[in-house]
Image (cartoon, rainbow over all chains, first blue to last red; front, side, top):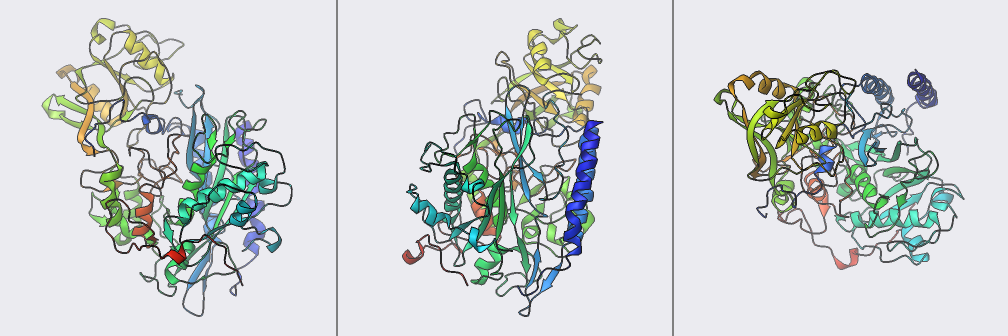
Length: 139
Length: 496
């Protein structure tokens, strides 16, 4: 419940944050080895291994799905606000307005390890993370 | 839009003024524009002890020097006659005790049909467009926006996991800011597609330069030649979507190691073949020739540890059958380490955990338990069901390594892009497949073992139109240029 409220509040905050942006109108036009993957050869398989459960999402998590849906809705709103501006020399430019921010998120796992990975984001977009799931647990 | 002039700072000049250690030289000029107000972020006056080659004596100085150091690494690799301006800041971002945003970055603008654009009607990130055009196409704007979390390591913000501002990669358990910056700057320089990977729709109805080198090997089509529906389908096509740019192909053999973990099914003949597997953080890594044996379904009580009799969450009820064999366990309820440890205690020589949710390729098994000594991995729910349905016929598997296949390649010399089912928003198509080994800078997860290097990222940027200062190892020479000596000065030219 707390999570849901947080998410709703955050979404409202997101919308509020975009109100001035949306009403602002278009932007100013003026302006070899042969070693197989052995213990010695791949000490960092943990990065790959921890990808899903340590990666802040759990496939079966409804919260994760909700977060993804919320993000998609937010993203559509952001993208709909982007405008192409054609210059006299034929150049077309688009101010991305942080819609394509690549966000790096870190999570501390129950066993003390950490995961750091890219997530979608916009600077004004609510972080689409599921609540902190114990990433190595299965629910 | 540019930051207010009063806050604009050349990190290079400041680094010199602060007596910073060597700033890498390069033909490109990357300037950090200080987006912080006095007293915070880059201007935080909190005293700091110089660390790992970072000579800053305040937190703000150290942050700025680390920014410039990472920018300098990129500057030393790329050629551009147009200054690349990174609007940077350190501000509090979303954070709690266990999860937090470290930072975020992107190009500020996307351009098409600019003077000299190699491919008409195609979007390029602004820094690349400027480099190709040889002029600042948007002089009123910075080129990359990057903001990082100033609260990391403080109370209730990933407490105990502070930034490491050193430049020597000796970060220990702290978070290496330089590595994160290198990754984020990579996105800002153009390591990203603007395609909506959920719908396949192109950005404002036009292709981006990335799409020309995204190849789906199932259909033989590049993304630029696909319909929206085809791109959306391709986004889900794990291990079948690759980057086919010439420079990446040329450098991949000298970057990626031979050997890819695999589960080989040898019997019954009707299901014989290789299965994709996600390996575990713990226990023995997969190796060649691997561990072979009969596959046995582990059974355990339905109890408070786990309701299913196939979840492996309690000591097994059929240890005699499991001993000396490879245990098949279903994902769910308890830690992966508990499941595998129960199998090991029963005498299993290996473990396969079948996913409990549809998706591919299979994720790995997170966790840590130093007492686990057997190999284990995760397979898809679909593969798990197939194996389980054939157990009565006798299933023999090998947890091993395909020694002929480079880790991160598709077998045809192409490097795999990150494609997953379901889509991982923010990572799908805009990163390498995390199966790559050694770990690459632009994988979805930033590995703590990353060197301060740009590995396959550099040839990829060359593939989309950048000119590199040095010839990537194994790469073809054109359009790479040697650096004229008079271009090797990392300077901040006057603007306006």
